[in-house]
Image (cartoon, rainbow, N blue to C red; front, side, top):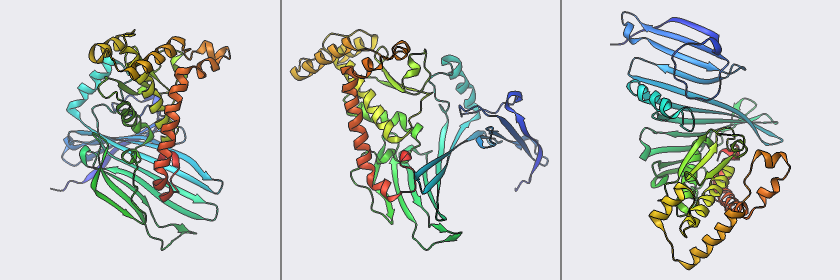
Length: 396
């Protein structure tokens, strides 16, 4: 039976400060205004729908919450950016993420934040991602418009995600040109970030070869933090070291606010500061490798009986002691580096002695790992970036 929906009521432009509705927000951005629309079905009050839209001070949509009568809540998060390719080309990017959760799961969802607070727990915990779409509209001074799109679909089946890059026929002075559409598509098992060898297609370009980061190229930068860091942790030989990764870490003091990310040897965690988002995928790769290297330094040091923290003692009990001569030599070197290490603090910054931190051998060692990772990420990504030149390189 087909139901006819009709608008029951709506409020537009309500100040967020005065909003007292119960829509569950996932975005951490603070809205300026809220619009609410109630949609009903004649003779079926139980089928009422509510759509709540949160906007910023410019009127741009931050998030939409769809509360329907089907047992689910669906949220759509928006992000807009303007980037330049060069002096001749500007790109307007709109990133959209869709999530859903069963309403009966909401009490458990809220309990997580009651137990752990709103710190370090991603807002999307327990939510199922549905799809991700990034539209990039490039406009050149000569009147040419190029629409490129990156999407991840079929996300409800994480072993069969579909990652797609498209470049549509160009538009010149309002007319669609006869140029062919570019397409790159492949299937990803996002539980392990493996590109499946057979489910792939390429039109107007060659399928990228030898790109060990291909499974991460379509991800939003923030969504890539945990899996990219996990990749470097595992490659550094720390897969069994119980290193936890917090992609939305809330700094506990003024010192921690100075770090974009840091490895905590007390707990064996890699913490990405929620106040400093990675500006590009390349920088993320470098930071992830840098922090994974710190994890290796403290891990190896603990295996020669120099454990200090609880995590280090745990590593020693599980994997130590080591008698490998080369590892012992390397571990002793790291032990000395750590003893001489000058951590970054607000006091150090205010005193103008930042070089004591930057020039420490512990940091220099990790910096080498980060630089190597950045170079590899860019080198292996050259084919796909060249194939889609109108998508800002920071996103790929």
